[in-house]
Length: 414
Image (cartoon, rainbow, N blue to C red; front, side, top):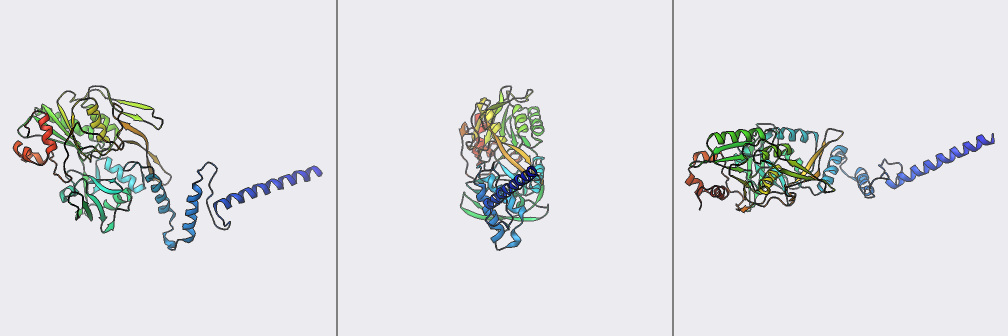
């Protein structure tokens, strides 16, 4: 009997110790045991206590009780965490709806105004209006700062929230208020949303020459197919030189960057990837490129980003052709998607891209071999717009970057 009483006493004592420990844990998370709280576990940073303290205060004290929806609050906390990483314009959190929108965009078709958005110096900017899209037709230009969407301040919104508000059903209208740095004036553009079918590449022979202009607008899943078709068409037309225009190309899929770049290189690497420990993996050129020897110039500007920078950097490092224009955007992290429990997605930069020679792209960009600055808002010539021009008109126009590319390929000169 004494032994039984002894074990009973030990058991009760253990229960009391566990209960006290649990109570202490609750106290560490909240000073009121009657209120629900979330306790920081031992493997979490001490700063998490501050987060939960703020969360609990919001839940208990915020005056508008209808705003205490845990879904938006959780999404907002995740967005803030990702933004604090400093991988602006790349690492991102996507709601289930935004995830679906991004998938359709990379597929080459989506509904919206046809403009790639980014962030510079904390402000939302137009990285590139898509060729032939409603934003471009309305007069939206690369470098425009987005100030309002239907009268709502856009400068305090996350990039994902901006995309969600700008996109919408085809046939509906959205009014964008932009500030144009070139003249420090603001403009309102009312644009009808459309289904945007984006061919990755267009091409045309430059009138009066044997030079083909290939405009690569994005590295979507059809990029290799469209570039291959453009190269075949240009060579059949007797092209003896190529100008590949990736100005205002926001990038896209890594595999397409490798496949497209491989069309212009005979061997070597397209890029290097470096992880957090600076362990590097090379991505070699894929054999069978169609344009590995034809003279080449690549056009870039501040709207050239991501996969387009991989392309320009590889051409430059291999001395395959000269790069002309402005320094590129400087986006160079490898995004790995992580599916979250509710169908949302975390796009996290887990590695960095480097050029074949090991130059960092992120926050550096690609510096052109031949710097030719253009004022923001200068109308860039495209394969569609040059078809009605003469060579003299092209030479007298404002697109001095294209003019320099022609000069480097032995045509004209000013």
